[in-house]
Structure formats: structure tokens, C-alpha cells
Length: 312
Image (cartoon, rainbow, N blue to C red; front, side):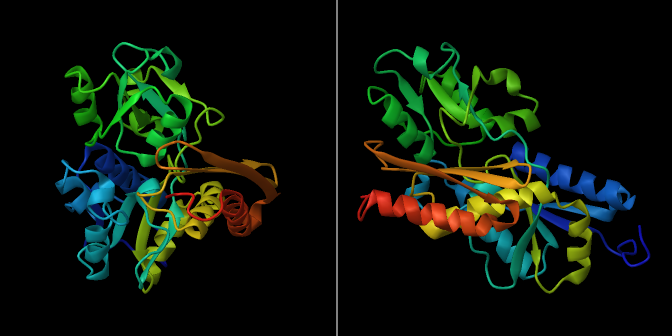
């Protein structure tokens, strides 16, 4: 390590949820820091924290509180210094952090696409009339209802392994998962097809891992700066600004994706009625450094198009 960042006297504590995917993300964060500073594994401790969203599996997310279901307890541990950093799936993150916390480190973003998963059918188009599709994502359900109003949509929660078991038990004919998660778990073989963003725009920040820290912790800030991926940060600045302006939550079907094209940032966004009966979509381009402004502008444009009470 460099002189200004000496080897920690005690292990840096990395807070995470306990699912296999969350643990992979925490291990990847540890690996990145070990590599950046030539530190041994013993310089870090992974701390598993139970969160509300994982403890309550028999209810839809919108019924148990929407925002912060997968982050609140981890952020409380960060604030009381039980942990030093927190690793999150960015698509689960509220757009505002509690006072005293900041999210300004992202690992390189993975595949943003949704995966179509089914034991019997190869794609959405192949699903027969009236087939049952399971998903806990209001965004995915609304997008599917818009495209295939004939399908039966059911609540489908749990980690990847739980959802695969539900398919085997014929609770549903198909479901959707994030390609990034399947790739990280070495399970891409379960995806029958990856859905292009042009067909189904992904969730804001899908495929991105964020690392949260305390504002008043300059040493940790300097460490995380070394592993931050700038391109991912530029893209998420636009997407999360778009989401924040819409005041998006687990109760709101919103999709968004920013892409870098040289010095230009291209942002696409979509708002949907929860029942999939209507959608409003649009896109904007601008300089890469103006992602937050681009996100706000696109959100205001779509809200204007949608009109009052669109989500109701």
C-alpha cells in the first residue's frame, strides 16, 4: 500500500446482505481492494446483515414499505460504525442517502439486460396465451403487461435459487432475472435469452455495484477512490438523477439506461402505468459530464407527457 494509506490495524468491515449474489458482490469488492493495495484477505472482514426485504418473503415489496427494504439495516450499521463500508446492488438503492453517508464508488458495470428464464419456452414471444409469469419487479410486470396483456402475472420473490425452484414446481411458466446476477453466480445457462434494452428497458442502475461509506471517513474515501469506475459513475449520475426527479420507488414502474458514446451520454427512459395499460418513453443526448442535468430534463419531459395521475 502507499505511505498515505497504511495497512489497517484492524480489518476493514464490509457490510452486505446474505444472499449468494450479495456475498459475491462483497467478495468482489474485497478482491478489488486487495488487488489495488496489495493487501491480504485478513485485512478485511465481511459482515452479513439481515435486511427487511430478505426477512419478509411472503409479501409484495410494495406492501412492506417500498424504499430502503434492502438497505436500511445496512446503512444503520454503517452510521453506528459497526461496519466501514456497505456493498449494494445499485438497482435496490434509494436515490437519497441518510445524512452522514455517501455513495460515490462504483465497480465496473456488468450486463444491464434482463434474462428471460423458463424451463419450457425460449422467449416472451413463445409463451402461450394465458401463460403464468412470476416476477417481484413492478417494472418488469408492467412492461410485460404492456406487451402481452394476455399473460397471467404473479408475485415471485426470493433469491435466484428460490425462484428457479419455484419454476421447477410450476408456480409459473417463466420469470425474469438480471443477466448481471446470473453471470456473477456462474448461472448464465439458466437464461433462455437475454432481452435487448430496445425490447425491454432495464431498471435504473441494473448491473451496477455501489459501495457506500461515511462522509466523515477520509481514509476509506481515499481507498474507494482507487477502485471507482468512472464510466459507471457517469452513467449512474444520469440514471439516478432521472429516477430521483421522478421520485421513483419499488411502487413505481420506471426504466432507464444511460450509454456512453465517446464524449456523448445517451439516456433512455420509460414510465409505465402499474397495470401496463400505458407507457411514456423518451431519450436525450448530451455531454458525458452533464449526466445529472440530462436525467432531470428527461424526467421532466416524460412527466409532462404523462400528465397528472399517470401512475394511478
